[in-house]
Image 1 (cartoon, rainbow over the protein chains, first blue to last red):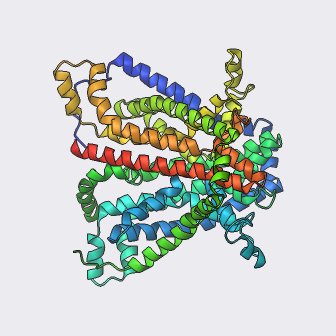
Image 2: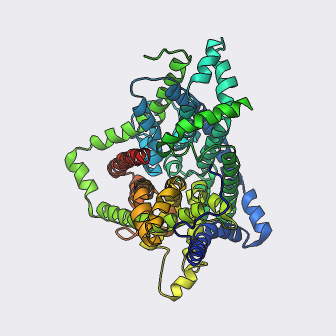
Image 3: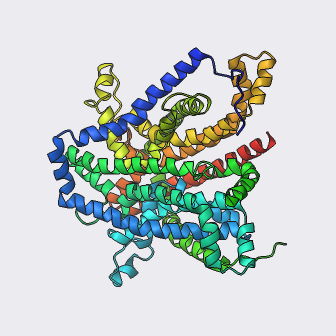
Length: 304
Length: 273
């Protein structure tokens, strides 16, 4: 970063009146548009007091929805993380035909409507789908059960870890790993002692975002879960059910848990960004020219 | 040619291809297969039915309006965060990602609570005759909320990297602030703006969770295409669901192509600069 000089010339838009007005407008709109939705969740959740809030959370169906959401995340997030690391290793450490195409395919779920994802899974595992009858004959339940929910969650979050790791590992190059293996380290040893320390914050960043999305996914899970109360309702689906049952306080009580998760995610995000995760890596196309500048910086970080 | 010294190609590439095939390619292939097996006449009849076309119109128009709103507000937000220093700036910067982190269903009921006729803002807006919830305006608000980070986070890095020397040169030549903004800054930001617009628009077209609570969901009036797909499923009309979902899928692929193209252009642009 350039050292700040004692007296900077005014830049475009630095007119004090204009600056104050623009800051004021942006802050007001942000307050109404971004902060208010967060505040209203808390206020509505406690609108009928602590007792009602606690009762809404302790209700068996709600507890089951919380449990199901946690179990889904406990399966989907580690599997997606393993996939993300494998994909990033394959794509950044080797040159092979179709590499760019593979990158695009990994990113596909990011641009597809969650409803389309849910419908697509129906046509694989549903009775009207490819394997539906075979699965029914074998008495294996995928749709309207935990496996379907996990699969749909994996689809919507498939790119999350990979897209954080790939730009970073691309920028870091292969020299260190090649040095390690030439010194006799095994592949696993190279990964755990050379690569992992360099990517840990970006990895954690991807995991945090992936987890938030898995726990909050609504559209895709809504199609494949069948919304069976007390059985296949995750937290977001349970919110919808309570809301349409006119149990507004209950819906907002469950929503408040997910809102807290969102805030924790944001805090974790900021902390990880301070350690260099996200931001730079999150703009693959636009950040590429900077890659050359990043490598020496990383090398010097390593010596300290 | 480069020697291949690192181990693990077969393991990692194999795992990646297996996962991508099972999780991404297989379901989308099944959907395309199902839609294609309809035959052209039936397919066209479903996707061009009055209710479907009305849902496209609602979805596209609301997404356009939401993107236009975010273009102005998101740009102003990115500008303020990059160019000015004020108390709470980092807090606002972190808040920009809230729509990413907040589950869509939670955002949906929260926005409805704010904008319903008896809600915090809705009550005041009702007095001046504006109804937001259960109208296309509500759909627009939900889309604008969920797609805000896309615009801000695409413009922000480019704005940060803008070379002050260009502005100084224009200033020394006597350009006014508004002229410099229009003729120097805006052209440099255009590729990033376009990329952000296409990302936000694509996200708005596919959004479901945040919208269905606030939309009212009246056929022909406030029914988005994603919801129509869902309704056809609940009616066990799987052919119609497949056909309409395929329209959303084709649109998503088209938007993906446009976004990649614009980002490639933005990249060339920054490299030249």
